[in-house]
Image 1: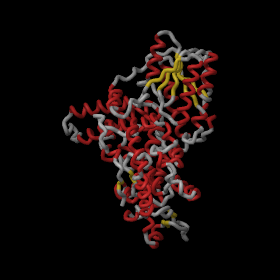
Image 2: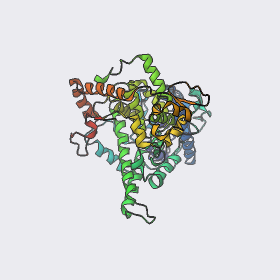
Image 3: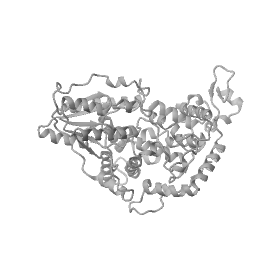
Image 4: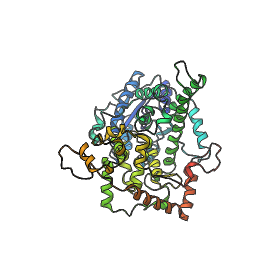
Length: 531
């Protein structure tokens, strides 16, 4: 039989292995789809029960769709090479068909072990690209042009018929297999997005035609982004929809908008739509751009891109670091926007990009925590955890790449710019519900009498039973900002950092479409000032 190995590609549309399986089925060959719950993957520090629940929902839907066309999906628990050996002994495998995956170090090692097993047992192992990440990568010069060519290429057809081996040869799995992994309950079940290709397609369509008009203007807003952002990220991460389908959908929508008048028949101004859809298509490119970094240098999951940044934050006392990390994880830092974003994230599995950047920046710069101390935990919070994007972005926001603009966000300014009336903050930090707008960014500045009047005590125990307690700021903003700025500026100005930054840019830096080595916004070593 020919085995279709599913990983982060839980769909039928634009699926190279399934398209090949349909061709083989037409020749009378048996094909079988398999998903393996690998303990080494699911018991790793970056895996979460919400990830597993999303995957299970997607697999349930995919299994139903496969049965309609004669296909089958079996699930197994075990390490991949062990599962392959067991199957091969009972129903010989002629070829293993899979998508190339840019995963964490565990899946990278697993893929190499599978390739070795296939070679040793005479099984052809074929891999397809699915998202524009290139393996091997010819280099960053011309990368965007090659990526767009892939996006414009024809999608793989949906399989119309599959021929599966009899169940007597490969039995179905027992229900509830994933529960044996011991991840526990999905604590985000009530508020997170649901898995499956039907949900993914509906999400894309509603964004391009209903929700996305103000995307370009509001994507930074923790209040509005929940509706105006595409919300496709979990589906892209787990492969219930392909990047190419999303990009081509955006291009079709742009074509429709270009053919229309500036104002349509309903009186809606279409210029905002055009800008937003173009911005969305651009971010699909950035999506793969960051994944390409991990593909090209797997070590960035555990080592700073700028090697001389190793040890930069090692001087912080371990007990103080643990205390700060716990407060950050619990949304108890005393900075309302930071705490609201963290509580929203841990409850739902999602928060918009600007607020993610602020969370990482705050942990790295204000709390002076090494990014490796929180990266796996943060991965578990993101329903859309994509290793390539995750580690590349965390290093960028932590200032350890050597090529990106260094951003140290002001928590106060984020409130003033994005939630001045506290719609978002009061929802996720109800202790601050009665705090006046003028004190919302820094509740610690409220006079004691006002704290008593509104029933919100900041930074201490209250003598009143009906008074809420909110922590005082865990660090002083200006002092933390100056310390981080000084340390990072000093590092970047060392001769070693200058040499290493050039090498990082050559390997990972974004390029203009012409491929010329111009100094772009991503390569400037400057600070974004925070008040």
